Length: 188
Image 1 (cartoon, rainbow, N blue to C red):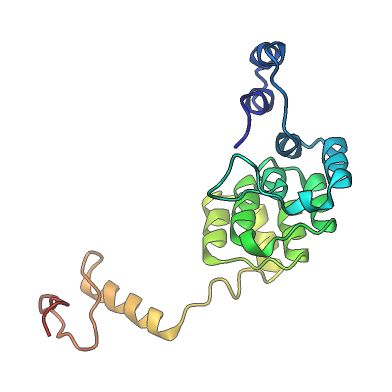
Image 2 (tube, one colour):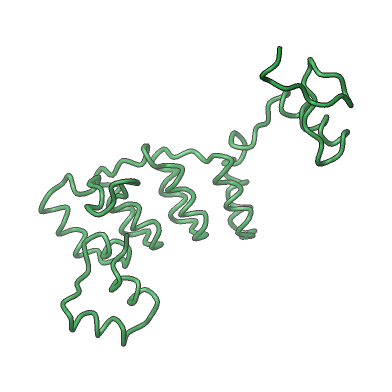
């Protein structure tokens, strides 16, 4: 939940940012994390160490922390500082990895891996869909895709069955005769 001032500054809309400032708009410390202002973030942590895991006051649903803002704003230095100060990545690790992957930030991904984050299929596909081949090669060389892309034998078999039937056919269940219409699960 970035402030309008943060959005204007981030997008280089200086005239809008100036008008907002003239009318009393300020940046929250969460906005400062997005913008990479280490001084403001350090001051906030010094004032209250619990800040590193404190959810944004206007966000009652996602409970976004300063680390969310630093990663989404592509600020590796701020993110590193917050992690070193005790920011908890475990509760949101998939989202953090997804933000870093969409930004194409090797530094942020490495930081998250160093603090125990493990990629999921979703993160891998975010990276692949971004078509950042350098990042894909780097992650592959690190062995980061291996466990995230493991496919169980039963999944392989179902996938093979679907290909044999044609792309739009429903999967064949072991108790269902191939070519027969799917059973209604409400009737036994």
